[in-house]
Image (cartoon, rainbow, N blue to C red; front, side, top):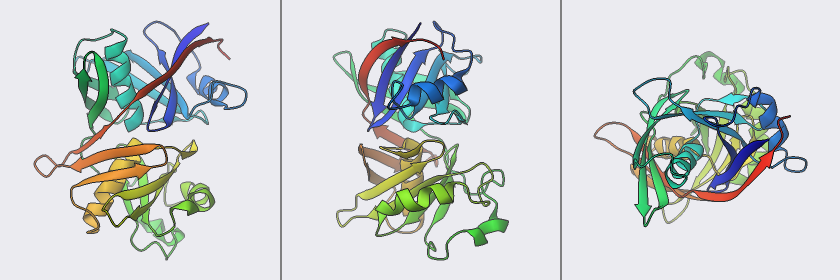
Length: 272
């Protein structure tokens, strides 16, 4: 039996397993079976928390989408890991270095009376040119109507489309995810800047479909909004499950994401 904890960040929910205690030999299969919302636990995927194999980081994260594919990074999951590690007594640090497939991310925990109320993640620098994730020679496969759209990598690929209809996510998201211009598939954001400056976003997440929130997607959207003159360097990204604060800091060119996290429940489940 494997002990697990379900957590969410703005509705982006994952199953968390302490891999320092429990071995999950086939996490790809486990993520598919356990993520099923009718026959399993129900989630957007599986996250394994481990010790870092390198001294530069304190802990490691592996994340698997609901379809079993391994993701490079997840902003919401990294915030949840910060809360998990601190409140479950695995660390006393309020600044944690987390090793991911897209590099080491620094987590700053905002603690009040022993409770992690929110977490700020240094998401490092955005990347705009990466032929392994975005092939500019194939841009003709993209819609001519998306002239304001931008590709942004936050350690994983995102394509941000500015639109007045964010609800087209269900129709266009699955088609765009698999376009040839994205060699490793892509997360697709449909974003609308509201009159108060808040940016409303709906996300089609690579390997998981429509999700309540996407931390890296919020970062990519904020960066794209600034580059296209739609927003300042700090913005609030309103997603289906909640709101994240994003700052693209000029001093170091890093993107900082701040938001809440929550425990849902604990349980035990057999390996598939």
